[in-house]
Length: 294
Image 1: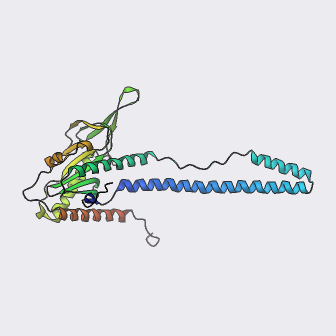
Image 2: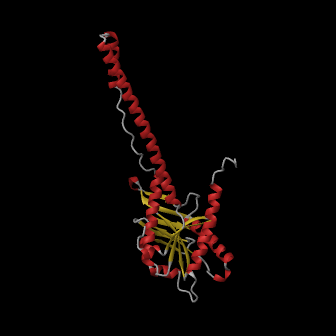
Image 3: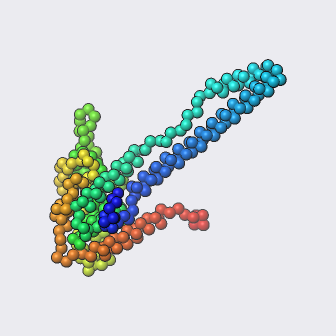
């Protein structure tokens, strides 16, 4: 993430589903590893206790010159020595889901750096805003207006025809592979960002109609270094681009200065208020019942 204090004053992190999910998956792997370590240590201790007991029996039989028991105990030691080695457990490698989440977070970080290299000094970036239609990666909050930004980390040639979005990559054997671009709910990027932006617009109109925010602009930004916009037809959003192509000129084309600038600080407070409302509703809905409530 960005360390410059000026950037941090203009970056407003509300939540991050991806980072929270990634942390949970990593914790689950580490917890499983610790359980296996405990089981390994217990198995080693049992093996050592067996060996010590068998040796003590051999020594006792030898001391008493009890050769038959000594032979049996000796064979017991021999069997223990031929038992397979007890290898220590290894931490499981990251799952495919972790890899996807990690790539997504790295992509968001690339876009965040590109945004702060491009936006004017009086613009702000909100990260992880959630409403009743889901969570979006970034919102640009400026005196010029608002723009919701959905970040995708798909590589290859990016294509879309309306709600059909996909990435083309060279497949094994020299063919072309086609990968559909959608969220976990099956929504295409335009459907995802439009639903959230529409809900945000409705909230702002109801909360304070005097603000005259106008239409919330919508963008889909592809963060992978080897992604390129190839064929985009009727995308249903204002802007489709790569992280590398973000520039101040490009953003000002979609959020030009207004005759009456908006109060960005007021907009930030309203966005945070709406996010907190929906975040609390979601948290309450998912909270397990207490023993008194069950």
